[in-house]
Length: 134
Image (cartoon, rainbow, N blue to C red; front, side, top):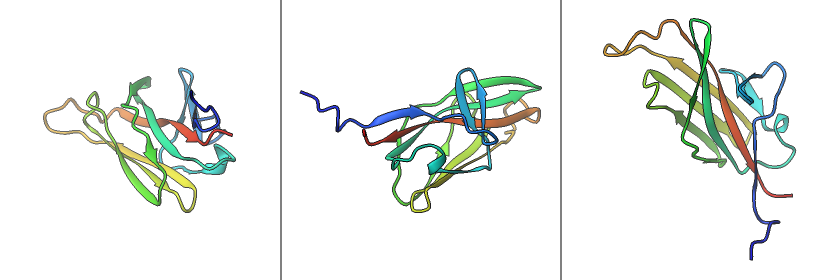
């Protein structure tokens, strides 16, 4: 028998004006903006899971789904965000547990064997958050 009171609750990034961009039903945290955990949930966060990246190529928005690997919030964590579909991406998610803040940083860098990414812009990272079940 499963005790539902012990099962953690996972929910997607909420819309936060000035911090997130909405596309295809997901809210993406914009790069370089500091997100305070209280903007997401009044409960303590257990983990953060990167879900998808949003970028544009010559004004056309595109999404790349990521492997859903939860990142436990303990201390300060620098998590590399990567995708085989876009190997020129160099990004990281910085989670600062003690200060209850996170930041998404990323760039698109052209490698010599790949098509140029100079017309591509990284727009945001969609996240899921896990909290203890109330």
